[in-house]
Length: 223
Image (cartoon, rainbow, N blue to C red; front, side):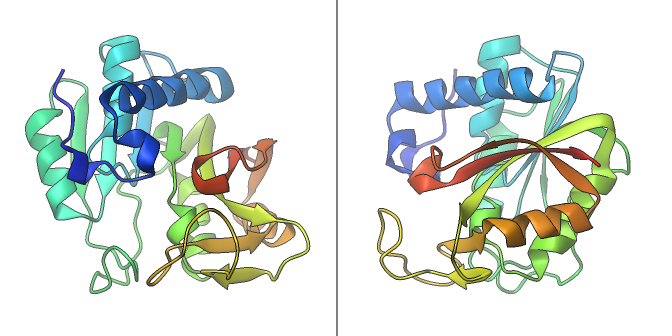
């Protein structure tokens, strides 16, 4: 199997080793199966796919599925993924939308590059952890529109109790020295869940603090 070169493996030091890279991808596919009902007949949207880590896990676990769609704002990563991982059941889309960290000159018109009611499983790992407090509720609303009836989304973000509603690069928080725009965006749990509810989504599952750099995991469904 072709794996992305090290410079493309975003998301934490444990993704740099080949075995760990594949293992984390397969583990997330297993969790998507357990938590969100992912099967070989599902439509899966990998939002913020990078160079296709999750696609590697899907190939390891299922061989292929009905539709894996990887979406990202970074041209170099999408170009690599499209060249090396695309094929029957697997495709990748570059979207030119604005994010102060990864695509500051992108379009202000938001999109998740999917049709309404078309996505059975939506995956966004370490995406809301780099998003401002205006884009967050807007994109949660787009996720709700994209999900098919009965569809679910698995997302990660930094949430804590008894903190400000939203903060960028909070001092003394987490394992890293946060540098640059939106390196770490932290929500008060109540505030993020208010955004979830306003998008007409509901929390199906919550796991605190066990993801990359201390992020928490949410499984969301249409409310």
